Length: 222
Length: 148
Image 1: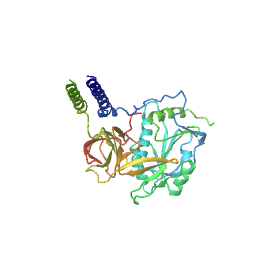
Image 2: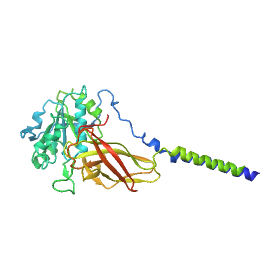
Image 3: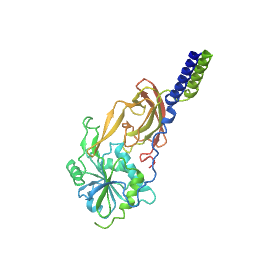
Image 4: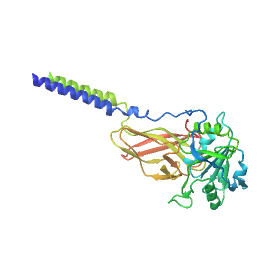
């Protein structure tokens, strides 16, 4: 009798354990799709606080002259003087990082309430990114975006002036098909000519919109 | 009595196993797939891989009749420079999910040319265990951004 009771208890315990294990492991798949974080539509920053990574001290706007998509010289400092300005270094054979970054900036600028900004895209791949290629690519985001190219030396000088690391061709590939390592930073300069913050792939559209709104009001040179 | 109880318990567990799990997926699946139309000539594809199985699996290839050159890439950042690296597999742990999102891991549809927003790309996803999943993947605009 005692032996029979003991066995029953064991079987019961096993059954409970099996049921718990089934619930925990066997059927867990249904919850997996709910684990990704919900997108944030608004920033939750204190008033006036920038979402970007602070540049300390603020960076002066760089000076360089390159060639725009109409084939004309473009003096970056002179053309963008007094304007809210976005500067990015990338290349058009970059369908993920560069296309996403330009789409985010275009989306932020197209939202209600975002101040206008001059967006300047400098190719780090002048061998393939001719003015026509640049124009066609940028028109997918905003026909007002400025595309700049130049000799490798001139493009390198622009990166140095902007204090971003020099882009390099990644190993491998062919002369027609290769990738570049390029600066991940998006630089935004307030109308006062200073870059207070930098942005990157982790920046959301809402954060761009939020910071552009604050930076547009910084109009007096510090 | 003990034997009858044991039999009943075994039956209960068996029913629970069938009822509780039969409706769920028992092989890797692809969710929320979309293609972003090229601004140049190469498109990117993003999706979520769900692995409900007790074994690790890897996505080893993605193919479409629309281009012969489909590559899987991860991105990395080093010293302020961002780079893409081609990979031969994307691993998914048991009972886990891996999401490919813009500005992260992606599938590149090289030289696919211009795509029309709303059109569908027939796509076959092949896993390391040989299983395949066929999806018709919708095309979003070249300037598409996810919410946020």
